[in-house]
Image (cartoon, rainbow, N blue to C red; front, side, top):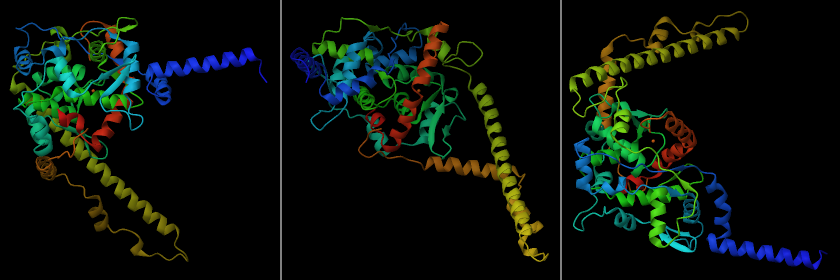
Amino acid sequence: MAPKSLQSKKRKTIGESSTVVQEVFRSIEHATYSLKVSKRSILIERELKLEKDEFPEFVSELKIRKWKKIGKYVAPANIRVVHEFYTNAREIGPEISKNTSYVRGVTVHYDGDIINEFLGTKLQRRKKCQFTEWVEKNMSHCKVKKIICVPGGHYEHTKNGRISCIKKGYLLPIAKIWVAFIHSNISPCSHTFDVHESRSFLLYAIIDKLDVDVGNIIANKISRCANRTSGALIFPSLITHLCEVAGVNVCEPPFEKVRKPIDKAYINRYCHDGSGVEVSVETSNDGKRMSMQTMEDVKVALNKSEKRDRALRRGLTMIMDGIRMLATQTGGQFNESNVASTEMFAKELDWDDDESEDGQEDEQFDEDIDDDVAVSGSGSEQHDDADTHDEDDEENEQHEENEEDDDDEDEEDNEDNEDEEVD
């Protein structure tokens, strides 16, 4: 039996530990989960620094939508507050309310209305979220690519044939600017070399002037992040502000510093065409058509090469099957029916040099896209920096840390589209 002094010390330690858990975390489960949260990286937002005469089409739309504060509130984020927020925002147990967290004894709400109120982005009462209705009823991948892409731009597909993303090089210049803003402050992502399918819907809505409930989008993104076990912690600056408004002391270090802002230099680099020359929003359409036509020609050639490879494989398979059958013949008898004839071999290989067939297949593919209208049910659902190599290294590290996060997002978008449907 342990001495009384040790027993007393042990009881005191257990009692203190229990008190700390009750004051900091919602439950023992949340306290355990905090260890995972503390190991996740933080992906902070970017401040928007543009003059009125810089990219006026983009700045004007920001003003019309009352989204300017989305790029102005960004400040260093309190790391401990962010960790505690995401730990207690995880929905563990039925008693945990949605879109609420608990930081240093204070309940912090982060639903769409709260975020819209902070950002000043609440839609007028008589207006509905047109983006939500479009996703539910009229969403078309074909229409999206026509609005946000240069001629010939298209979606990429996974190995299983599912629509995945649009390469950044396929986007219109104005769309690239919006993608930089979306990837930083609305739907954060470290992998920004392309535009995920769900974010392409939001991009379409913005360019096509649809009303978007941005507060609801952000709230859903935060909730998704809180209920994952991997990936970067997003909106840390916004969360620090919300906690401060709720009465939490956010002045104690350490802090996560802000990244390079979205300014003219950043946009020119992010939207560059590969030549290092500043890209104008009024880029010549003829130049686009020439480059995109070349890409389409390459695509046709690759498709034909792939078709021939498949035919060769079928032919080799037939040859090997015939050799195997001959090797298993008994009594030295030769059964001609076991070996493919010349006609059978030619038919199976289907080696067609006629380009018209490929053209018909491409045409049919476009028709299939026209008919591909996705309807989301209840609704739920990737940086370059401006000047320094250090910032590039930071982005590359974040990209590596968040590959799993992007994979998780792909899986979530298969289940539902709430993040972008709210959009």
